[in-house]
Length: 198
Image 1 (cartoon, rainbow, N blue to C red):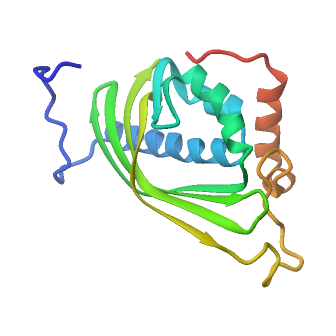
Image 2: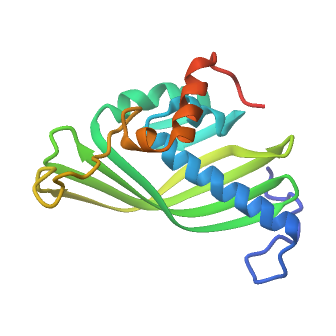
């Protein structure tokens, strides 16, 4: 979009929210949550379905380019971590019809394979979204890094984990044993050939 493009009156200022805007905001919040789940549970079929076919993902300096390349690159990068946890703490959306922009504060936790160190990235997802056939997806996703932490940690299980359901990176995570609808949803994607988004 050119700098001279005409923008709507979408604003971060407080304003009456229409039922359509409320529905759009809820759909965009679900999109953000589904992204975090897909990354942490390494559900790459779900992740791909969250982007439009011509979407760009910018995780510079590691990867910048088309979404299919991002999804192909991600398993190798994620193989470096025993566990990850991506969370969104705040969301700002500007919605303009079937297009929107968002700034989402994020914390991305990473535990090394040997479990002795953790790396935590704090930043913001800077997104552009498009709604096609009533469905919001990413058109562009970029990570702005604000700061990081890198520190030694106690080995997993060192305190208070006896009898706890311990998280796993992929399909063996306890969430799939405890939530049958979530398990069936993942299984349905796995059973289908890789489909491009609508």
